Every structure is written in structure tokens, then in C-alpha cells.
Length: 192
Image (cartoon, rainbow, N blue to C red; front, side):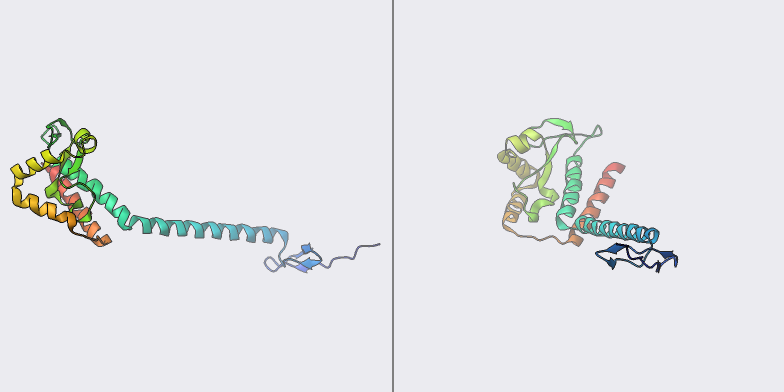
């Protein structure tokens, strides 16, 4: 039995004559091997670029999501509120027990416990607290309230307590404005 001679065809890209690729007796492509491999490599490169572009878009979406903006805003709010009462050596006292530490070792404790949006970024009720008071002793609420009444009066304390039952929704633009505001406040602290 003699094998049937396969007719050479012209490559659709480089126009050179070549023996076609056969699969089950059918021509699979009109490209020569060199052009076929080049085409496959280009196809894979474009697919990788599409994946990169999709990942980049997802990162941008995440960067502008409310939860990620809230994290950035809280980081700046916490820094500002721990530094606002610090002395020249950047030491600040815990408002409930009086322990002096560098502001980076203190935490930003809320007068009203919880993470409600209505008072989450309200500077009137956020002050430096040591880890022991803020976490281990649940904020030492009684001492915190006594500090707030001594410093600001009962009217403000009642107003902050009422905020516990208020619902507030942040938009990305609200959070971006707050971020810029805290950056400005921190910059002012740096200038002092």
C-alpha cells in the first residue's frame, strides 16, 4: 500500500508552501508550523493581558469600595485622635487610667462602644486609651464617662449617647472627604 501524497498548501500568513497539519484526515489550519506557533503565542499573550486588565479593574473597584475606604479613614482617624493630646515627646496619657505611652502604642478608644457609623468618626468621643483599658477592660466605660462629663459637660455626653441609636450610611465620596479632612488635621499636628 502506498500512502497518498499530501498536496502542499500556501500559508495564509507568510505565503510559503508547506505540508498542512492533518487531524483525522482534515486540514486543521492553513498556517505553516512557524506561523501557527507564532499565532498561538500571540493568542496566549492577549489572554494574559485580558486577565491582567480584569485584575486591575477589580483592584480599582476594591480600592473605591466603602469597606476599603472605611479602613483607610479609620486608620487616619485613629492616628489623629491618638496624637491630638500628645506632648512634645509624642507621649499621650490614657484617659481612663492615666498611663503615659508613645501615641503609637496607645489605641483610639470610643466613648460609645461598638462600630456604629453615626459616631465611628466623631472626634468628640474618641481619645487615646491603653490596650488594657480599651480591650481587656472593655473601655472602662464608667471612667470614660466621668472624663467626658468633666471635659465636655453632660449635654455633649447625652448627645453622643443618643447617636448610638442613629443609623448613618457612608457613600464613597463621604469617606473620601473624611480621608482628606483627616490628612489635613494630621498635617496641622505635624506643623506644631
